[in-house]
Length: 107
Length: 121
View 1 (cartoon, rainbow over the protein chains, first blue to last red):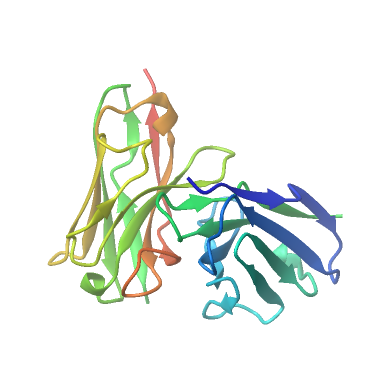
View 2 (cartoon, rainbow over the protein chains, first blue to last red):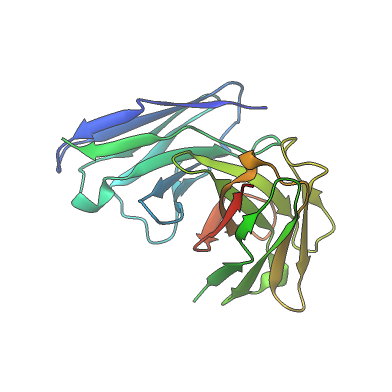
């Protein structure tokens, strides 16, 4: 099973600041990695797929990079609605796995 | 507009069974793989099962293999999850989700609102 480790667990930032979230895989997943955003009481929302492709309707301030085992989700300038929990997910190997999440909170 | 509506959750005793349904609309259901993902209180998402567009291929993690069965009725645009031999650790909100691509089983671009399954005596 591929383990995805996200860091940091909590990121305390102010609106307008840049957020950099990390996801590290225990073995290569090539570019088969997605990022989701989840707010309390809501289902996850797809942001990025195939490591760097933005899903439909996702603002340009969200970007993804990386391949193999190291991936990054960057939010260039935090908007109030971006404070949430972010998860990465790999689809390279069964079973499909999610990371433990990074909570982006208001500083 | 794509809509996924889960139903069938509730309280069940350990060892019991439950069948979840997910009614889909707004897209060609028979063209997309579907999946179930669960989320225990305060925890991250956990993939539970996936099924190909035709229903001919199904996938499970070891944690539910042999106890859960995913199926679909493309004529009714409905996804199912039969859950048997339920355990306390199966307590979670269960989401159905649609695969982004016609081929492949992840990632997921549309999710339902979730249905809560509680396993307790």
